[in-house]
Length: 193
Image 1 (cartoon, one colour):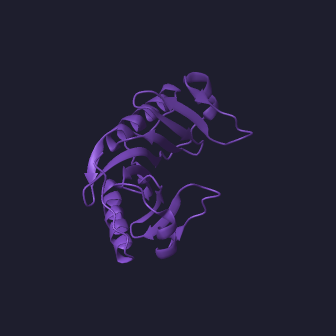
Image 2: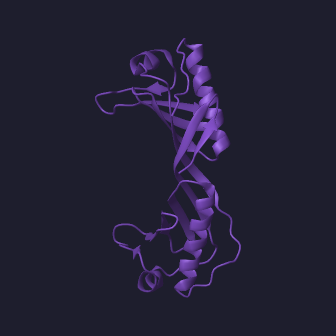
Image 3: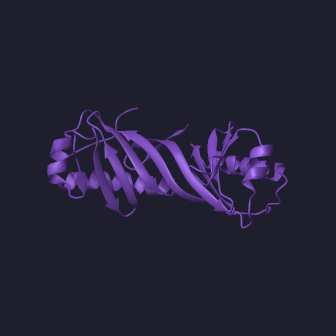
């Protein structure tokens, strides 16, 4: 779990990456369940088979049409390693898979921190596209369209960014957050983590 500088001095920590690949071949989930460890499949509840891997720590949803969704990695390097292990596990079940496949990042969730406590009520009153209902959820939800992400802001200054497809999107989104808050008179700066 690495911490990297982002935006105007922010340090971000990637918490989770969700990505998928389409292998283009059918996958026998029965074969997977019988021949591969750490698998679980309950087709009456959900059509995908769950495969858990330990190093790097990740989970995969494998569908019979050949789509694989991987979640839980914290870096693009770990995502690549996890996908290789997932495809290798499918091959271990005796199912022929292509040597080349592309992985598409669907969502990166990252966190950072603002310096000090922030007034969520003040932000909710002044900032368009924000939602704050403290009786239902303790954080404020703020969405921006470019890049298309959602922020969760907490009174403590903790910020979670979800929906980015690469780390550059996270950096640009944080810059936009600071800029948009500044436009309504709310000054924030990164915390020294």
